[in-house]
Length: 58
Image 1: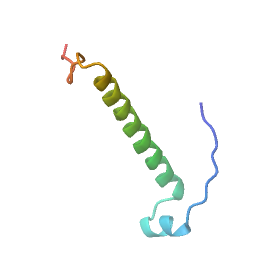
Image 2: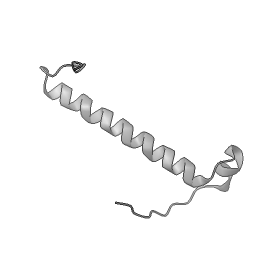
Image 3: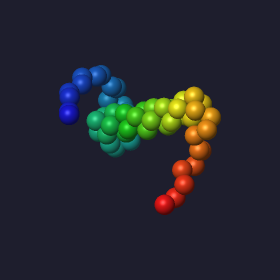
Image 4: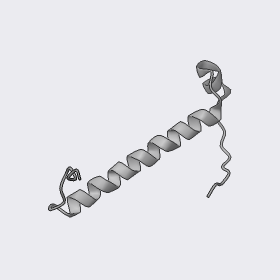
């Protein structure tokens, strides 16, 4: 599913980096989603002390 979001970012971001503002927004969202997934795993492990920290390799 895709959705459109409208935000305002300073033009300087694109000028300083040579990348479009949309690139920075995408990377920021990817980092947030990855961090959120890690947080959920950490919370699950705290709630279940029997859960192994490192899953066994098959």
